[in-house]
Image 1: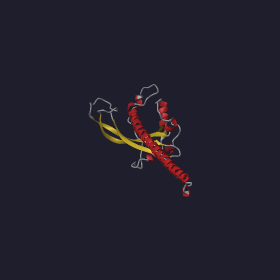
Image 2: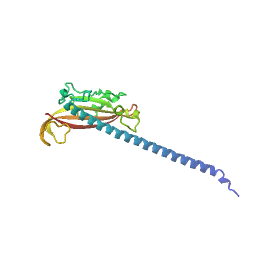
Image 3: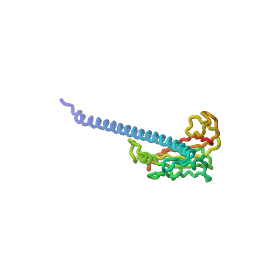
Image 4: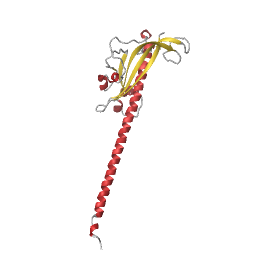
Length: 221
C-alpha cells in the first residue's frame, strides 16, 4: 500500500535540484566573467607598459637626431641644424604637442603625463613635449597586428625631455658617439632626462598610466 506522505516528493526534489544547478551555473558564469575581466586588465597594463617603453625610445631618438641633424624630406640629415638641444625659456605646464593623432586624447589636455611624476621640480623647463597615438603610428607604419584598430587607438605614448647639465661621457658602445677619441675614452658630455608615459585613455573607463624615465648623455664634441 502506497504511503500518502510520499505524494509530490519527486516534484519537490526536482525543484530543489533545479535551484541548486541554477545557483551553480550562475556562480560559474560570475567566476568566468571575473576571470575575463581580470585578463583584460592584465592585457591593458602590459600593453600600456610596452607603449611607455616606446615613449622612452622615441625621446632618446629625438635627442640623437638633434645631435646628428634632423632628417630632411629627401632622406638626408640637415647638418646645419645639428646641435645639442637646450631647454625652452618658459616653464613646462604639462601640455603636450599633439603629433599626428586621431582621435585626440583626453590625457593630452589634462597634462596627465607630467602629473604622473611625483618628484618633478615645480619650475621645470623642457626641450620638447610630444604626444602620439599608438594606433595611428602602427597604421602609418604598416606594422601588422592582431589587435583591433579601435582598441589600439586608445593608447598614447608621450614624452618630455629636460636638459640636466654637464656629465662625463664614455664613448664605448654609444650610438651618439662622435669623433675618434678611442673606445672607452672619457669625454665631456651633456646629460638629459627623458620622461616617458604610456597611457590607456578609453572614454568611460579609468585611465591607465605607466611612467618610465632614463638619462641620456650626449658628447659635447
